[in-house]
Image (tube, rainbow, N blue to C red; front, side, top):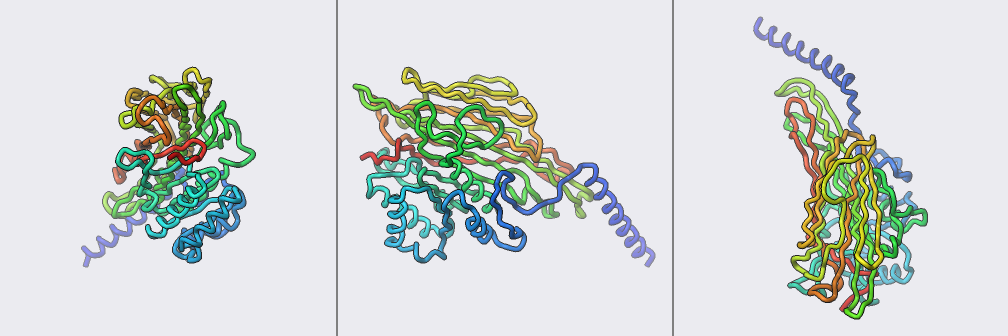
Length: 444
């Protein structure tokens, strides 16, 4: 009996100590209270319904109803009138004729998605048009025969924008609403009359101009991932961990010569990331309070212009070059004698230094940059490694479309307690293939 009483006294004592430590550690670390998924701070149009009591789908529908920057439609199995090819053809033909920007939010079963995307492609081709940017790849070494990337059918949510062409892939766990809001904002920025020029950028996903020194904007492809629940253990420990937004805007121009037409492409790439800190109290083993800080420290960017597959696809200029460490990174992209010259400059909040190394292999068409920042949580950081390439008509494969493959990695070297969470966390995107068509014209 005394033994039982002693056990209860110890248990009560542990609980009391745990409560006191939780209050003390929470005060000392100033840990933010865990919040539900909410739209990015720069979004002005927000649904008023709480995240806790409606589903992600309902949240997206509510947002679309109050969002007025772009005409957006949610397509899933509930849109019965749009699931037949005839209805889809009529719908898309009307959109093409109106020539106004609109966006489709697509998710659900694969055959619904395939029906929607294939019908849109066929509607464009019937008018000798094509999406300027595509997640697709050539079949059997033939650029005129292409196949869509399966990520369009398997990603949790796909947001496609038209006029201008855009594709956004939303990954992660339960962050689809955040991703859709971000994608619609990025799409709206691509045609909004208030767009700013491509110039100095400082830690922000600012919009781009439609022309850059004679190069015309042809479209965007982006990826969004957010670890909402974060790393966890059987004893709990959930919260926001990392969010990554990758956004590449593509530009193109051409130059006619006696040898044929040279097509130039700019891939203006922006990676934005934010890390989070969270904590709580663990009643299991190890017993006590815990915390984790996931800082977006490391960025690795690779754009492969596929010279090894197509000799006519040649990397001309990229940046930043070599290696170094500065609070502001500045570099210029040029394309030989054709007059294209683009200046890019960026920095991050707090005047922190950005260390970078250039691991590019121009002979193979690969531009690769690794960048490191002494980042903190609750702050967004942006890096902008970019490059210019050309289709050389005198070499094999030197004709549209331009095929590229992009890979991104965000690494976090974390500060953790009790080793309850992994010491590092990574987010990565790899595209199977991207096809770029100048001016949205179909090439036979």
